[in-house]
Length: 250
Image (cartoon, rainbow, N blue to C red):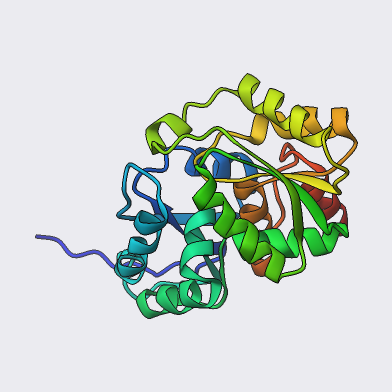
């Protein structure tokens, strides 16, 4: 066998780790649409139930550190995101941070709740309408957590869909119709489309044009927050006023 010399290449790209639920079929495609190629995103999967309930969301706490430990050994991430909105509300923001850092080396940690709170602060938003795919008990926990951060949720709508595989296949027309109905019922500052598994990117620009309000989604705010944490830009095609403001600022 012939041995050849070689050199090690220094890491140049910003590095993001993404902890995705086993049942999630949407967020990885969305992040490819949102993150600039200058950002490297590595993904690990967190065991999760096919049915969403407060109990199943809480159970994921026992798997987050192990999932984070499956990232390449010795890899230091500029930021790691835990990709579950309702799971974060149920487990708790601080607990998510601790569990992620028990499994991997991350300079910063985010999840959709902290990302949404940061986005609302950036946009000057204090009252949001929430559209969720999940049953009321799951969404009420999220609303309670947001209230504790000073974000009111005076109107809430749901597809009442407990099955994750079905959530990933909710069509854009249904989301548009539901969001339009919610935005016209109560005066709010913005609309939030909750759940990392719900397809939302294609409806953000049309809804903003119709309602004249910012439209946020779990995947949009998480990608935005992670990019802010690592100092990276979004793609030019990334939708929404939040991404446009960030592009201009960077």
